[in-house]
Length: 288
Image 1 (tube, rainbow, N blue to C red):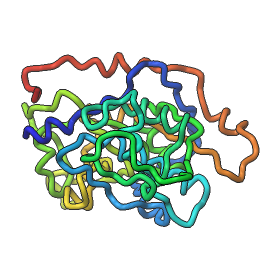
Image 2 (cartoon, helix red, strand yellow):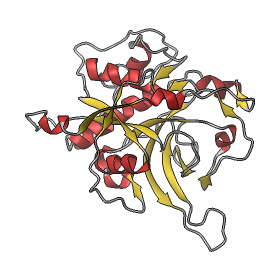
Image 3 (cartoon, one colour):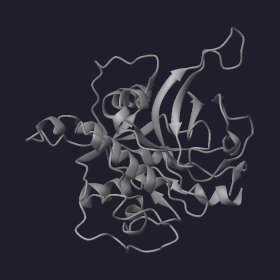
Image 4 (cartoon, rainbow, N blue to C red):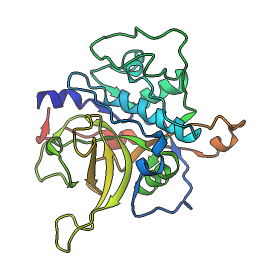
């Protein structure tokens, strides 16, 4: 439990000035979806941050940018980008100790990321060092806030996985399979964990069977492929675990486009004060 507590160290947003996405409401939402089936050639392996470094925010940001770049540019495959760079070269986050997703995304927007081959994930090697010579960088054009189930699903359908944080309760640590529903009076960790939403569905089963007809999200962790089912957990919808209320859409303009006009039109100037939602008071049932 002590190891787990150290790894739950992520904040969704460090400020409330996050632009809200403008999502096409005409996109039809199917009953189920799994990006691994739709965007097969862009899917990267599940990452494993290990037990010594709270790197979920960095590794999953890098992975999501990698795959969305592949999807946006219709590449033959994704090139894994460096989570190590976000951990130790971005001085506005706290390396293995803590980090905010929006801070990592700001870094990628302003500076880009080198490939994993150029700067591999080695959390034991502290500091921004060991980068290859003449690195090639991948940038994002923008990121914005998705609010609510429908916006998240529509964005995921067209652009790929979305990045968010999860309020983690202790009983999810032992998850194996099936649909996860948090138990009653189960303690939760004071801080959150970075995760990715990669799809959704409805659990099939016999009439009267537990979770039959239960809507769920497919949520990818950074705990390796041995956790859950290939690193993914089916989490029952509507549990107020934060992740399915707010997520980030990472937006990348295809290199074939010559103008940012279409991209600009996909953003909304409205700002959503997400910090108001994130000010969660510590309760007696929390693991401090």
